[in-house]
Image 1 (cartoon, one colour):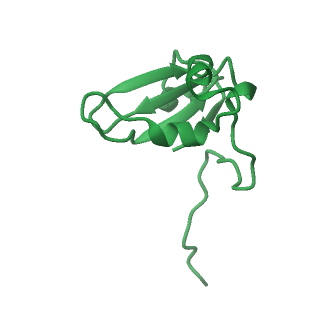
Image 2 (tube, helix red, strand yellow):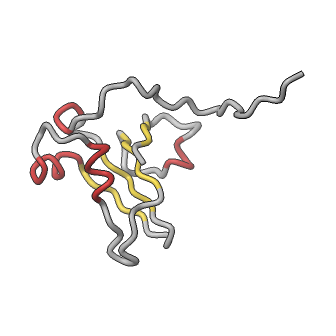
Length: 101
């Protein structure tokens, strides 16, 4: 019997063939960034669209983010429909989440 190299997660991630999330399609959503230094910041996509344009690929925007406290890239960036709850709390809740980085 072969031992599987990967185990299935309980949380489904989007398949790699999904189109990139564009700012114009998620204007009411938020980017939730978490850093290794325990800093958490939520960015409104509508404000990011003003800076990068409505056709900005949010996964590329996520790679440009830097922590103001330690100047590192965020450990995790999620596209969430509600900024009031963190991803760890959302898994069983009602908010929609898409991991970007």
